[in-house]
Image (cartoon, rainbow, N blue to C red; front, top):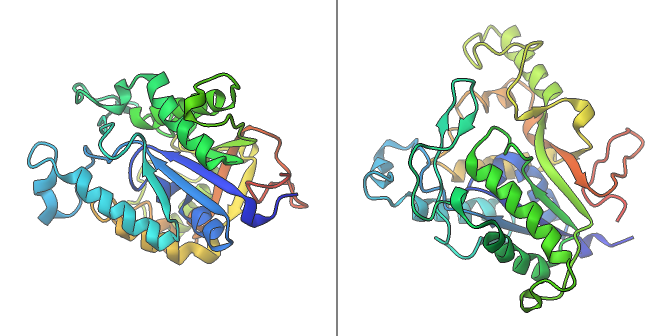
Length: 303
């Protein structure tokens, strides 16, 4: 059994802020416990919306400075989480945020026009080999990324999934690109998700408090967005409630993208903080090791 200080976690995300929304509490907990946490971000999020009016000049159709600004936001967020090893895939600016648009069915799809070096159009083997080099350097036992749909269809999330899964395979091949380091096989791979049951409970609390506007059209017993997984699909729940303050500070650092007064984060104000402090995962490779509760509670369980 490995000591916690020998545990190494690698997370692959598309844009700054994705990591904190999805796994910020887990990252903060593991960093505090002395486990190694490495974040690879695939783009700088240049095409993101800007929620701070005085920074609207940074938009892609104006000064196009949002990516550099979000680089600073990411650094501040990682400081709040206690994570010191965070990198951009291939270096800052190698791949650009592809942008997106909303389909009539409510999920994201690629934008009509994209930049020349948009991540969505990256050569898969080239991008994967950039990550292979990181994998062989860090030698993580656990990898976390998105599911094949990227949670809600964002093209960069889908591409990050493809790159991460392919790189994990290539990194283990004994004869593949030995100039990128000694081969390494990742023991366990997880796809981040959110528990449908926690969301349903949050909706119940909102509706019981008389709030019918937040998540209008979504009801506790109705259909949920694709980012929420049924409990039977969830292999692992990591309790990071003790690090929720760190996660919220990290979320606040992503000020151009996140408003903690927004509807999604209103769930925590109603008492359902477990939707943010307890983070859910679906195992994609490896064997979960559930505890007496019947659910795995540590991504490194069994290693």
